[in-house]
Length: 76
Length: 376
Image 1: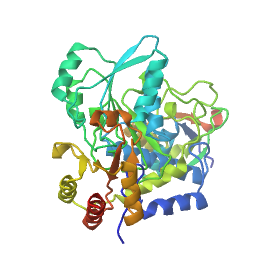
Image 2: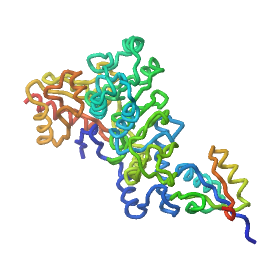
Image 3: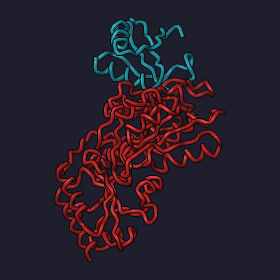
Image 4: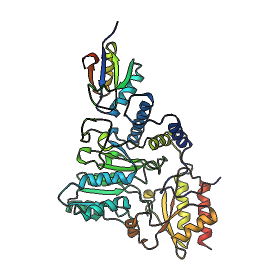
């Protein structure tokens, strides 16, 4: 079954890499991918994750004062 | 083997072994850029840069690491602050500077003065260049300054300025501290200043080509350099968030790799404070030389200058190297204002700048070598 995928985009590289390290330390399942051009012409990276990680991932990032913009991948 | 390198105020040597190892590893195995992609080695490089930024922030007790910006060196950092504050203003700003400033401050200031942007005065001080905080208080009551500037430790006589006391009495006036000669050897708190410039290659033991600045209110500064940041790429404008706003262009990831390795090495001093003070006293007791250091022991950083009554500074430095292999720097040390303050503008001095790597044995070798030349 294909579960819904989400993309978290960050204010800048520093926030993105902090989020990457936080998610890694929390042993969450996620991938780092280039920012889709439909979101931005950004040359940087963003985090791709599954719906089952959504609450935990956003909660843990919010607890560290990181507030990404989250998109549902199939709707962008 | 004796460590005969006493020019650490120019650049430190030796560096921790891990600096070269990590730089080589980065260049050979992981030479990716910062933040401009999503593959593994970019993530590793980006993470390394941010770890280094976090370590610098911790070192200066700054709880907003995103307000620490990497530059090429302290000079670029100081130019960023001074030009960012004053170049675009139409009125004349009045600035108060310490009597010990380096040309990294004086030249951008003179440039701004030539454009009619700033005027500057010198802070009240004692003969050794130490700022007279009591008189400074009176000065600040009389005149409204836009900015105060002082180095933390002089690169000529090592006098350490009372930064916390200055900030306490000048709470309403922004303070720029040039920590080039102190960060890594003397504690400084970002809470005691509004701007802090530093370099990585002196007492932090990193490679040359990487330094930085801390800005408490970055929104007040116009960036000196404009260009790509890997963020807001659809816009021709610089981002207004940090650290991107002050880091246009590819950062010196090679240098930052080395700086991080150097800080993680956490070098411990091989001599004690008492041993250093004993050495400086031995210098003071050499009859034919005059030592330039802070009068008060508490304000003595681990660098100082001297000159001989008959032998020129250039000649003394040359003899130290030729006869004993000791590396020092003579002349004006790019700090003519400091030398004018000390009365040594004509002829300059021989500067001795210690490192944590010096043992007491190294220091005694230095003393005996200077004594031999001084008494020839």
